[in-house]
Image (tube, rainbow, N blue to C red; front, side, top):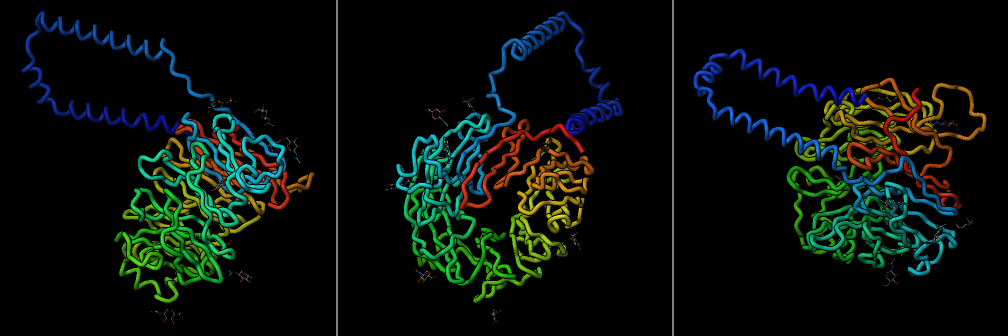
Length: 523
Ligand SMILES: *[C@@H]1O[C@H](CO)[C@@H](O)[C@H](O)[C@H]1NC(C)=O
Ligand SMILES: *[C@@H]1O[C@H](CO)[C@@H](O)[C@H](O)[C@H]1NC(C)=O
Ligand SMILES: *[C@@H]1O[C@H](CO)[C@@H](O)[C@H](O)[C@H]1NC(C)=O
Ligand SMILES: *[C@@H]1O[C@H](CO)[C@@H](O)[C@H](O)[C@H]1NC(C)=O
Ligand SMILES: *[C@@H]1O[C@H](CO)[C@@H](O)[C@H](O)[C@H]1NC(C)=O
Ligand SMILES: *[C@@H]1O[C@H](CO)[C@@H](O)[C@H](O)[C@H]1NC(C)=O
Ligand SMILES: *[C@@H]1O[C@H](CO)[C@@H](O)[C@H](O)[C@H]1NC(C)=O
Ligand SMILES: *[C@@H]1O[C@H](CO)[C@@H](O)[C@H](O)[C@H]1NC(C)=O
């Protein structure tokens, strides 16, 4: 189906050419002028013609030699499928991609807790000053699953964020930052796994670390964004600022003065002011980074505040008028015409809010959304949001146009509890392929003989809205899943992390990559 679309795209430029030549035909006077002004044929022009054809022949010959005779440099062969197993381990819900070994194929980063000290490791927990079991970070080649680096990084990990840029000119252009339990804070080089810096964190023992780790504009003048860690203790959220290049804390702890939940969003208003938005009970809360920075360091720093936002946010509760009934679950950025808009997903409805006025862009849509929506292109080059309305046998997948809020397509796809999130990948026709997890054997009503639940991965493409292609079925517990373009426009695959459901009971952990494009079995 993709080939057909590509063909269409290639035909269009030809159509344009035709139209141009027709325009020329319809305007003969100019052509006649050209004929009249052309010089008479001479021996000179015949020589020119001969020279022209000779050089054309040489050109074609060179092209022929380059394209057929001289072989192309070998691209590293990428395996269709690979799998890495660890016995007696626990895997974290974390998956990151980067080209680590420079072969232009994305590589896979993950974290696991290993309890089998007799496994083969270059460095053990004890070597790094931890007791066994401890958390390992690992990077494996996307091409064949061979280990690139692997090392103990913390006793246990509370929060991790990769691809944090490091200062210009520094050896490590990007880092993974890990907030460990208890009280460690470490940055590792994505490319080598070496420690860039390592400190003990200053959070109090009772504080819980909230996600995600935010990157704020550079405040310590090293040219790299800095880190904002938010913690919660006794119904109060606090912010802690750290330099991303040294890991040193900037100033002191600053209280946001409210209670809140994970799911922070660093929002920049159209006037250039930074605000931290987060769900707090049944409303949307906001806090200016300028205000927090003043509490932390005593000065205003490089940040601005927006008078309109200051008037919208209640000075004591920091709450904004809520547009949804029920709890606020997720806040997500959507690219708008001028700056980002905010998709607010509540337990009973979701709505797109203007990034400056926080007014609804379309009327709120009633839906029972329990999981984070994803984005993708249902129509060419127009972004759509994909939400799951309901759970279990009532689950319905809705594709909505972000510009108007109109439902583009709705798909009934029953699911099992605990299935992984959906994913999307761009395709050659400027749309997206979507990946959904659902019940195995959608059509059949009979119970499975073995009684064990199977999750099936389905692929959906908007050009064939009635087809769900089953790519895989898995009976083990899936901890993390993602669909990834390992190489742009040629190598799409999905990555699965499977392992024990209970983090206290170690078991077999697997990291699996499998090519996704054009599976075999179609329903
Ligand atoms: C630990 O790892 C070794 C080598 O991989 C394996 O033979 C052994 O069975 C593992 N032990 C457990 C408890 O899984
Ligand atoms: C352990 O390491 C040795 C040498 O580095 C290698 O030959 C062997 O295959 C490894 N074993 C496992 C279970 O990874
Ligand atoms: C952190 O630093 C301490 C000493 O400063 C060292 O003993 C420890 O191994 C380091 N930990 C990591 C994970 O690099
Ligand atoms: C795996 O692929 C990398 C390149 O991505 C290559 O350097 C390495 O030799 C391969 N390893 C195996 C075992 O094939
Ligand atoms: C931590 O919590 C415990 C009980 O929940 C309390 O007794 C203790 O004082 C708290 N510690 C701090 C530093 O707040
Ligand atoms: C802020 O909220 C509190 C508590 O809901 C309320 O008493 C107060 O009037 C509000 N302030 C403004 C300026 O709206
Ligand atoms: C979501 O499902 C509920 C009940 O199944 C239905 O009333 C509601 O209209 C659905 N939402 C959308 C946006 O279709
Ligand atoms: C799904 O599982 C069944 C039975 O385990 C197997 O025969 C079938 O090939 C699987 N389908 C896919 C698409 O992997």
